Amino acid sequence: MADLAEIKELIEAALPGAQVEVLDEGGGDHLRAIVTAAEFEGISRIDQHRAVRAAVKERFDDGSIHALSIQTETP
Amino acid sequence: MAADPQLKEQVQGLIADHPVLLFMKGTPEAPRCGFSMRVVQVLEAAGAEYGAIDVLPALQPLREVTTELYEWPTFPQLYVKGELVGGCDIVEEMLDSGELAELLEVEQPDAEIPEADRILPGGSQTSPPMQLG
Image (cartoon, rainbow over all chains, first blue to last red; front, side, top):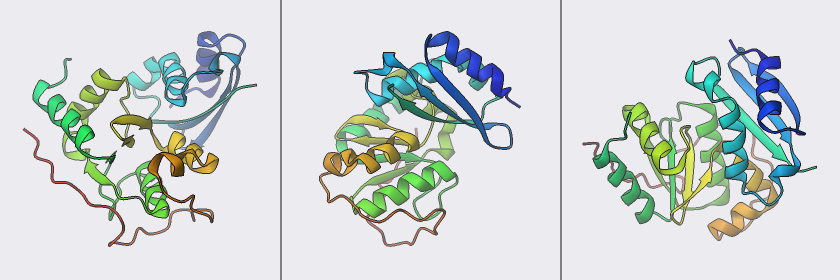
């Protein structure tokens, strides 16, 4: 079971200044992260997603996140 | 753990050979995951021809391959003209923005794709056979 607040913190730590919202889409292990960050400007969607995923890699690896939907925006 | 070199080569070959290739869980007629199903629905709505590979028989080895090649461990994965487009989120975003239709060289599909509709067989998908070594 992933801790939503922790996931939010991990992403915020990796992307300082980003606005992050983490929602449970069902069962505690299907999450949705909505991340708005100026540093996403000019970066491909794939790279934006890679950045978010890298931030929470441990939680993927230990199985607490089963699926993470990612939505990225620029401010 | 290093990815199986033979499998890696096979994957690279498939990506190079198919203009539109979807690595998914299950098959277009019987998707085994909601995200995979949604990408299939997008492709069917766009009327694009695509190849589909079911990753479930070799999930972990394939994760290792795509992680090594593209730093992308999760499925579904859509490749168009040899490039990784992304997973379900990105595909849906690009559908909404019109970018996907442009990339696939198809007309922008109009209506909203209905949620969780059954995939009907006989769509625009042609699954290439995949022999895993």
